[in-house]
Length: 229
Image (cartoon, rainbow, N blue to C red; front, side, top):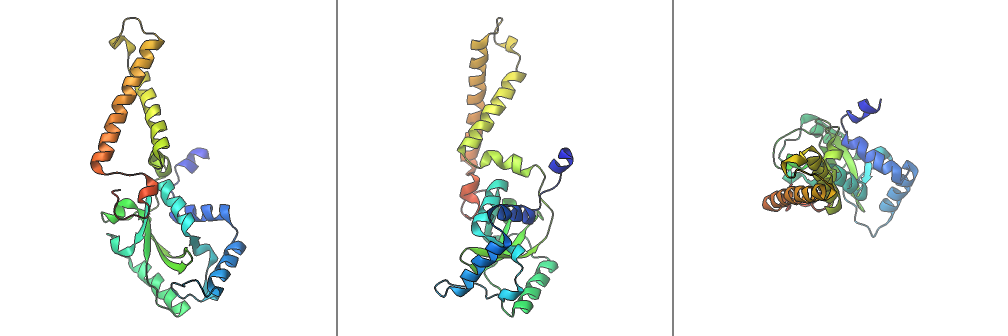
């Protein structure tokens, strides 16, 4: 069962819902929304009919940010999206506009960063702002994420994760390298010298490639159009 769970593709909408459910209940979400709509000092974006809203489709910016950082996703204005909105997304927009008697605007896309450079179909989400950093999910389409994406993207969350990854990879490389190639009498001192050499070599390559290509960590790119992905 554990193996099957690990191999199950990741649905971004479900990942968002999971993060939200850890933070608050639907009742708490409704209370927050009531505050948004009743507070005249807060600018409302996209005038929704409160009675028509589906609370399970409402997410706060902090929840979106958390999922983006975990899976190395981007949350950007739709104008930066390289793909084409499918007919199903256009129909979803029309349906919501009709139900809420409004015209939606300021659309944002939450998707893997590659979709903002190339035309692919990996699980994009179309959202619109409601105000006070809340967003309403309009439509989801495309394919789910690779089941191991969260693990693959873990080293890119911050410098400490990358350091731990480099130390682990260096340890594996050292363990796979025959010590007899370097000394006739392998001992602990020789092992640690080889480990240090492996770490320095691997870290140098990673840092050089990262700086040369302008890569950055997940927290820096999730909502920035000016960072390379």
